[in-house]
Amino acid sequence: MPRLKNKVAVVTGASKGIGAGIAERFGAEGAKVVVNYSSDRTGADKVVAKVKAAGGEAIAVQADVSKRQDVDRLFAETKKAFGSVDILVNNAGVYELKPLEEIDEKHYRRIFDTNVLGLLYATQAGAKAMNGSGSIINVSSIVSKTPAPGGSVYSATKGAVDVITRTLALELGPRNIRVNSLSPGFTVTEGVKASGLEDAFTELAITRTPLGRVGQPDDIAKTAVFLASEDSGWITGETILVGGGLRL
Image (cartoon, rainbow, N blue to C red; front, side, top):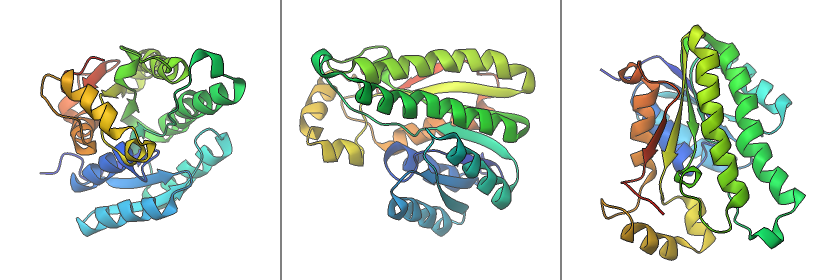
């Protein structure tokens, strides 16, 4: 039996990459999926089509999670289509490396506003929409444990995500809402390919990954299904590293 049958899941930043992989896997496991996107409507529509082709239900909803009014609209559209929310995956995020000398307010605010403030806005609305229980999955990163040079701001956002996860697990536990971090290692996504750094990152990752390969979005999605389902019903406030044992 599908592990997420009839559950309603909101996945932010789901038009491509890890978010798309999670949304598609959730759909295959029986969830009704809200595919959130900020600007890539074409990508979101493709994810919706894949979920429907597999026999699931899905809609695409545009929202910039760093803007409260957009987040409110995201969950209003979710309620209109599917009712209450059972699962929230805070995946939306932006990535940029800069050495110390080049860090400025624009860089800082762009990354923190989406990766941290956006997560908090979505969690506020998502927890409110959950009816008696739920699972919140915050997509963090291995860089919260082993940051790379040039990643001061980005890595700091993922460290914040892990601390927020633990804090909200304590706050929301009495409401039977579980909160966990899912921390991918190096994963090949459209963003990685577009960066021009895929080959260099891949070579480094393979040399430091005991399982001897790089990750794919579905590797992360399988763990997200576990965290969303009752299989992980006794797990909250934890950070689950999913990277083949990678340490940078």
